[in-house]
Image 1 (cartoon, rainbow, N blue to C red):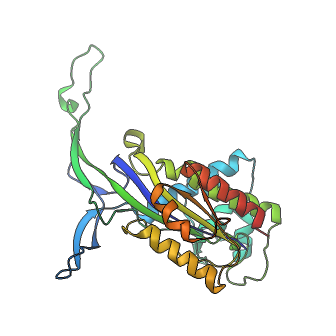
Image 2 (image 1 turned 60 degrees about the horizontal axis):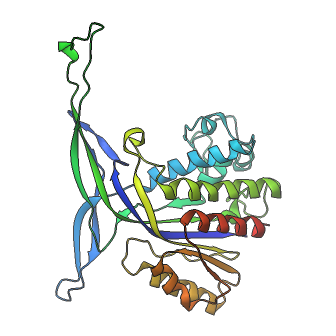
Image 3 (image 1 turned 180 degrees about the horizontal axis):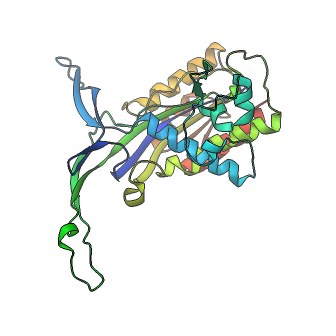
Length: 322
């Protein structure tokens, strides 16, 4: 049994990770209303619109990077759609049970699926929250004008297609993120969670690939729309990655200014109450390190980079997954 909880913060500059479609020649970013605490007793909360990155976007790219890791390892347990990064998660009609779906494809095992014709579904065991500009600093965004000049073979600008002008918004901010992975259920039908339907080595391979996809890809900015010309300029500055053998409370989203202290408090309460007995926590950054000092020394490991933190957590997952 293995459960993973991740939270943290990252500087993300000049991203266009989520867009809402073009209106004319203008491509706008996804925006939602967010509640923030003000610290003012007279008006303790405020709500304002800000630029967000959807959990669906992060989930898609995590699935893509998981496929890459599995293919690199020579793994064959992927359906044709997922192998081509087409994450329908609405599988073929000829598969009749959740167990069969799990056996056939690692992505449908990890990220869930819905087959409406057969009325079969599997909830995702990998979940992502929206990335939000943090409580104490809003994001800023602006539009950039792009154009393309079309030349004839003789070098003359073709009048009909001379200036293909469009505008696209880009944003910069300090973003909080959070995700959960209930890897105890890798290879286990959720409709009848008694025992795995795939072997232990295959379960460990799928779980490890899911962890490494987070480590070397999402936490370094390999996600989002328009990434061919606007790869997020990202630096993950703070991270808490907790792994437990027992079901683990969610950590507080990195959006909140006191997320590290609140997350540390939740982990301590889980340990002190006996809800969690086997716990390892990996941290990056001064704020998480100081907050997690309330936990036993043998539980917490502070490292220099988010990649190192999640790779070490993946090793624990591999060792603990039974």
